[in-house]
Image 1 (spheres, rainbow, N blue to C red):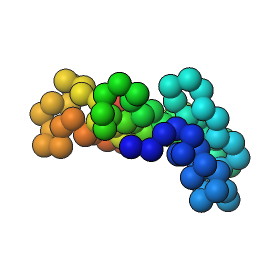
Image 2 (tube, rainbow, N blue to C red):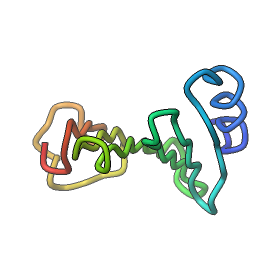
Image 3 (cartoon, rainbow, N blue to C red):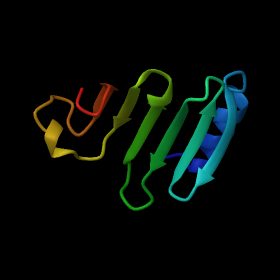
Length: 92
């Protein structure tokens, strides 16, 4: 799995037209987009192949989008568990 520094480089180079900043902040990478929304990226350093992406747009339109595979028992009923996607809110 890629490191946060490798993902940071990809964001800054491959997505330069929409990325204004990318900073490793401890255990996550924060990518600031041109519309002032941001994407947080987590890659577990302890659990193999565990990751998460969170796109925060709350200050723009009240939405969040998240994709991760950290086991969340609230979503155990979905066929792709532990992989799950939150569309618009934490509850969707």
